Amino acid sequence: MLRHRRFLALLLGAIVLVAATAGVLWLIPSNHYIVLPDRIRPVDPLIKVPGEDGAVRDNGIYMVDVRVGRASVFERLFPEVHEGASLVPERVLNPVGISDRQRRASSLEDMDRSQEIATTVALRSLGREVAVTPFGAQVVLVVPNAPADEKLRVGDVIVEVDGEPVRSSDELLQAMEDLRPGDEVTLGVRREGDVEPVVLRTRAAEDDPQRAVVGIQVRDDARFRFPVDVDINAGSIGGPSAGLAFALDIVDELGEDVDRGRKIVATGELDLSGRVAPIGGIEQKTVAAREAGADLFLVPDANAAEARKHADGLRIVPVTTFDEALSELTS
Image 1: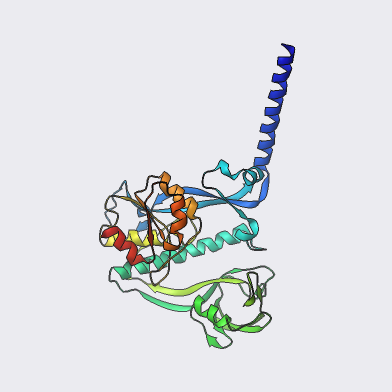
Image 2: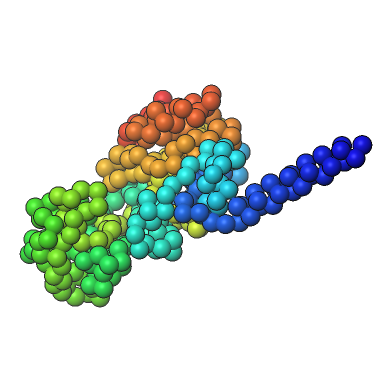
């Protein structure tokens, strides 16, 4: 009896010790981030267009995001405690010197632009004319200790490279292709209405020693003139991957019935030509769509193979363009 009691005491002590250790490890942050499935969200309540009926529907078009947070040491060691979890090293999610706040601000900028692009693509598919006037490449992030640090600011718009005009981020990248790390480049920067020259010495990109960079992230700076007032309010959600869902819902509200009583989840970044670009977090987004009981999940063609690995019965519909997505849903 005494031996039995000692055994129970030791067993209880071991359980308490393991539980306490796990609790401590759960509270200590690691050097990794954890990416988790988020819930799907109906897009219709986020978008306001003239003449909509305002009816609440059980189904329709849904967007899906991921949750990203600092992983605890326990989650770093045992990520399988969360279904669909992925670990990402800090250096991958946040380049050296970039804070969570800066990354978050850049993500919200991406969301703002995705709404303008989605509105443009949707209205053009409905035969409406949308005027888009390009103005240059706008700086949305400056990497600390990079050549551009303290010389360029968020909000600056690059309109020239070595005297040649630049109207978009793609044209900026093309202009930089002729440079080699260590070369000097003169950027024409529009700041507070005036254009001034900024001279920078390039350095090698971390992922390609032959590519010259100055340490900035940019997006197209353009002005959009819409024939219809479309208001999208995504709140605190960031990133560009809701573009496809936004555009589908705009067509659903202004044009033909897209969802046809189905629960349709869509993810994909749109460009102005209507191309659907690949996105991140496809595993987590597939799990979320599956668990929500979606009838089908529209994904960029480049993400389809990975999505099918986690579909478990969910119908995956790969698309390469917005027109293709509409055709899949309305044919």
